[in-house]
Length: 196
Image 1 (cartoon, rainbow, N blue to C red):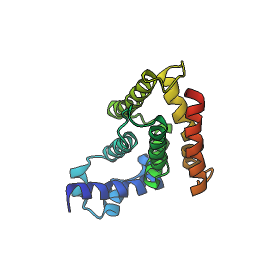
Image 2: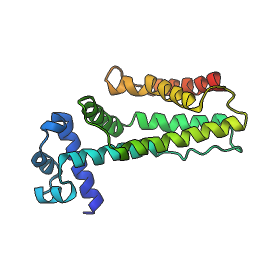
Image 3: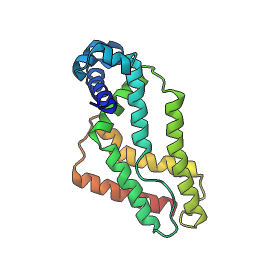
């Protein structure tokens, strides 16, 4: 088994334990059992459960910041670019793996756990890409709103997360395929109505 496969087994087992007990009450012994690895192997990969948690957060951030390369294209219509951005964001926000990890991270943050500078820097890296995309679209005359790029980015994130991510994250609703289709359509319409 490769190092990546062992690390994934450990993180998968940690997700189960953290969901069940929270970070403070979870035990390394139970994580090792769940991953079907020896405690020695577990400690070789992760010296503490906090190290497992930090790696999970980093993975969550990397997944959130991954997806399509956010580079503005003059040759592609703004509508198709916005649709692609919304499509990828919706796919990510409704992924069960992403939602489960987000629930664990949010729970721990609400209990006072701080995200590391490394995690925050990775979030900022993704934000900067989107802000550059907005700036390029403004320079090309496609985005006409006279508000800051940051406000545009914040409004886009708030709109799609408010419709799709938070209601599902907190178990307030299940999103059907039809809901998803309508939310993506509304998000694109919102973007053009508000900013173009």
